[in-house]
Image 1 (cartoon, rainbow, N blue to C red):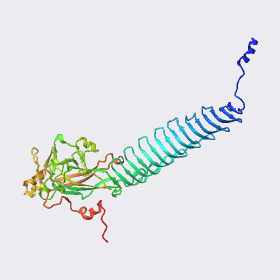
Image 2 (image 1 turned 120 degrees about the vertical axis):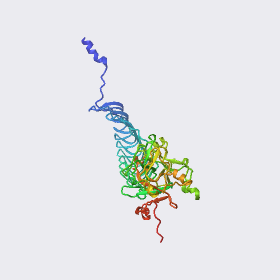
Image 3 (image 1 turned 60 degrees about the vertical axis):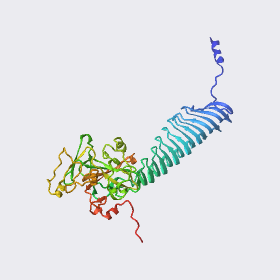
Image 4 (image 1 turned 135 degrees about the horizontal axis):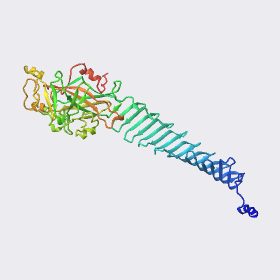
Length: 497
């Protein structure tokens, strides 16, 4: 047994432990005394030199070129803690020069590095798939660069420490474009935007918002506009800022003109008391700022290719109303639930530009040849003929027509109806009385996610008199020439020298 035991060690062969000293030259394996490093590779004069692999106790490693015991040249470094890997150039153990960094969390970087950080020009793909190509400093996007965002937006401009700052151009995935100054990743300073809706803005931006943006719509003119029955009229509109200045920096909003009639009118205000609406034609009531509700009333504009009344030749032809088939009626434009032109299209009331809709130019818009049509089918007017009866010679005050026999045309002062063409004009025109005009912002999609609140204006239809101009404003200080000049969108010509 002893002999057998003595022979066992010799049968196993000599034990090969790692050398206590590094190899001098050639290929060798050496484990450092602290057991944290293990090197396997080429040696020269007792130093790591050539190609080798240095392993760390935590699982990290470097494999590549060594020079005089230092990590130097091309190699690959893996960090076990983060899971990141760099392949490229090294100087004194640190990534330096050019290389590719692959991140365990997702994404990669290819470009210039210094002391292990992104520095210089490079190409970065982050974990969300967003791509940046441009300058880096201290591991951050810094200097000129381009970026493609996850939502499809593209930015080309200046960066400061990972934020867009300086001058840059943003092209949105929705087709909008902004060009101008940036600060801390938002529009700030002088810049211009061409929105996908067609709205353009050029001016000052503060914290991502236009400083001179329109906040409300104003319909110019006196408190109550008077128009002759059956005559076209014009409506001038301005977009105002918070402090009352015209928003001349803004153009392109789409405004739509609509009309309404009082759901229940008082005799002190109008000869038309109210409309009885058939149950099948009942519309959503419209709340106005005047303290009463309205139901939609048709606003008509010349159809495409059909000249308006003002464009017709003089003489008798100018007084002939357009046939009803040539008018595009816009009912339902005031519905609260129909907030977009798409809702109108669904009901068959497509906005007709430039008749029912107009685009704003430098904060101003004008609707021309606007007409109130006759009551639509299902709208039966009840006439309050107080003032007319007085003029006719003392008929009973405040009489309403019987519900079963609503009138189809309105009687003129004096109690007799004109014959021929005048009768046809009245049949194709709105009844005398008060109406409400409304201008709505129907820009789609809304500019910067917000539409302007609607604007309202009283409109009074009066009997047409011989020689009366198409659009008559109520007398008063607001109707004076000085008032119109002060609120005009067109600058006055310079005074002659």
